[in-house]
Amino acid sequence: MSILESAGSFIASKLKNQTKFIFRPFASIVTYDEVKDVPNKPEICLIDVRQRKELEETGRIPASINIPLDELEEALTLERANFKLKYGRAKPQKDTKIIFSCKSGRRAEKAEKIAKALGYTNLSLYAGAWLDWAKKEDL
Image 1: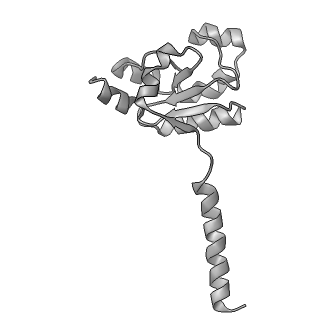
Image 2 (image 1 turned 180 degrees about the vertical axis):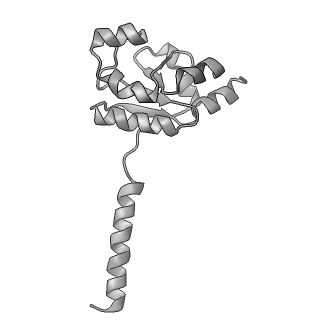
């Protein structure tokens, strides 16, 4: 094998590995307008994964429920009755549309991975998260 062929094989293998990372299927991204309409769509579950103290300081998006990221896995594995008792709404089904939000988007991405690992299939991220919401709502 020539040096050129070796280099080509090496580069191809590196690109192949990067392509797997780059093209990992992510959750869909929702916009401010879609999140703003959630109160009119009770079949959608909007979950804010920030800490409770953050919500006390900034407020929350209407119709969202707060499940801090460090509680999410436990929350999504609760019995239905216990989920409703703790979070005040029905536990989402595995195919319920769930939108995750946080402050800037990083924790929402982690939340999506947790939910996906638990078998949830209809997951979205609010791209702008709280920072976008607050800006557009003049908060």
